[in-house]
Image 1 (tube, rainbow, N blue to C red):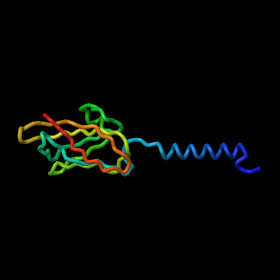
Image 2: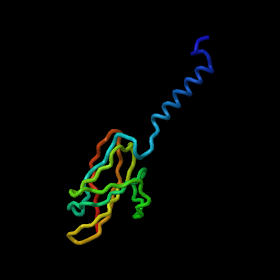
Image 3: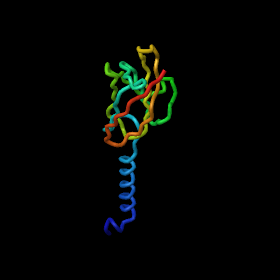
Image 4: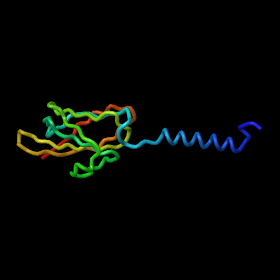
Length: 129
């Protein structure tokens, strides 16, 4: 009897196709992808150098000021530029904590973003006093 007419083999093939599709189509926000987000941390359009930018995976709403709730962080360079690389597609929240010496003020703030697969997104992080 051919494999197409054999119910067990047909069911097994169908199960394998569904399992492979599920495995390759599922994703979870976080590292391991080919997307990235970068930009500048700004307070009223002025760059905030050395600001720490935290990222929360799977969130577009503000998770709060407790930085232990965030999944990773980077420190912006002297030009206030930050970057997170090798991210999966999905939702993320970026939260910046820094210091504006022109005030002087401690500044914080953030923005929710949505990354697509293989996307290099540019998104500035707005902070305020």
